Each structure stands twice: as C-alpha cells, then as structure tokens.
Length: 97
Figure 1 (cartoon, rainbow, N blue to C red):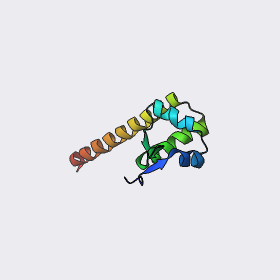
Figure 2: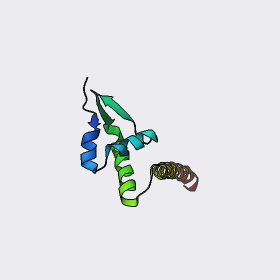
Figure 3: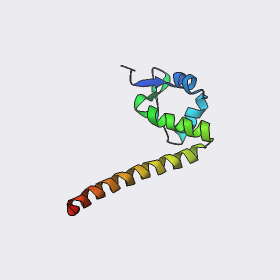
Figure 4: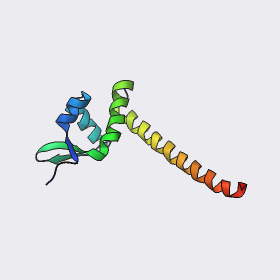
C-alpha cells in the first residue's frame, strides 16, 4: 500500500512545533481525521491546508479547539454566502442588459 498521500504526525509535530497531544485533541474534536498507516498515525495531505489554518489560529491567536471549530464554521459560511452573492449578481446582470 502506498503511503504517499499521508504525512506522519511525527513529521507534522516537528514542522509545526506542536505536541502529538495537539493532534489528538484536534482529532477528538472532529477538526482533523487521523489515520493509522503501518502503525504510525498520519494525516491525509488533503487536510494540510485546513491544518495550517488551525495551527495558526491556535498558536497566533491562542484559540482553543472549540473556538477553532466555530471560526472554521464561520469562515465556511462566509465563503458560501460570497458564492451565493456572486451567483445572484450574475443573475441580476441579465436584467440590467
């Protein structure tokens, strides 16, 4: 089995300068999904962008896991509303022309 799309937690701990317990907490709160590959806990590379945002929120702003979850949900909602607004504006342009 190929492990290329998975990054071991030990590598991420070194890269982001956080403890393994940080990732366990994220996993327990449903913010990331940890997968065990060859007896090593890993994270899929598709989660890295989200993980980087989580680490920044935690380290720079000292936000706890529940706060991070709230911030990420609000950011998703903002993105959804922006897309909806863009679609609405595009539909209104039909009537303006």
